[in-house]
Amino acid sequence: MDHGADANRLTADRHSTPLHIAAERGFTTIVAELLDAGADADGLLAGARTTDSIVAAATPLVVAVNNGHVSCVAELLKAGADQAISDVRGKSPVHLAVLNDDVACVRLLLDQSSGPGDVADLLGLSIVNGESCDVIEVLIKSGQCNIEDGGTRSPTRPLMLAALKGRSDVVDLLLDSGAEVDAGLMDERDLQRLTALQFAVSAAVDPHYKADYCRRCVSLLGLWPSHRNAATS
Image (cartoon, rainbow, N blue to C red; front, side, top):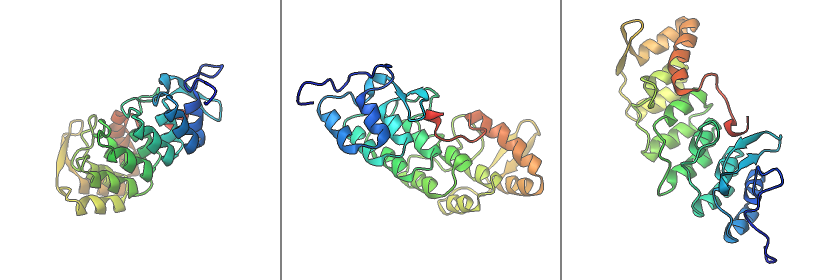
């Protein structure tokens, strides 16, 4: 850099910048040096090539989050990287962190003063795709997610989703956080009022009901089947 190298120079295939590569590999010191040398924190919106040679449109922030490099994420956010820029599949950095069950990245992204603007679907994402309560607890404690709201495209409440998925740990967490136990919704197809208890019982008694209703509700979120590493698959 001391000899005038361009910190924003695209690679020969025009898919990535030095910042993309450093963020992907977790080279925090290099990320910081590139940013100090004037590298665009959003990587010129170039496509990022991953180690398995799959190309996907991504910013360095998306690449760092999807590879779980929290320290690189911190450097990029400090430099003003835009959380609102999604990958080619429409997944924002915080969505990817939730899908990957990455507690540290989720907390870091939510703690930023500006914060992500697309938090409405995060609880549903984590309940359906996650494997632990940790991310869900971070989402609730952040105060940015409504524990009674299943998301912008699904009428199902988080407590109902947790009951349907058989996630008793999440059910306990939501109830301890004040979720309304008897809140219901009207199933327009079957014309019946459903509560979390009915979801739990029906899912336990009839696995076909569980699969069918999961598909009907969760498909609205574009999350069936579960997927991980969305930015590189």
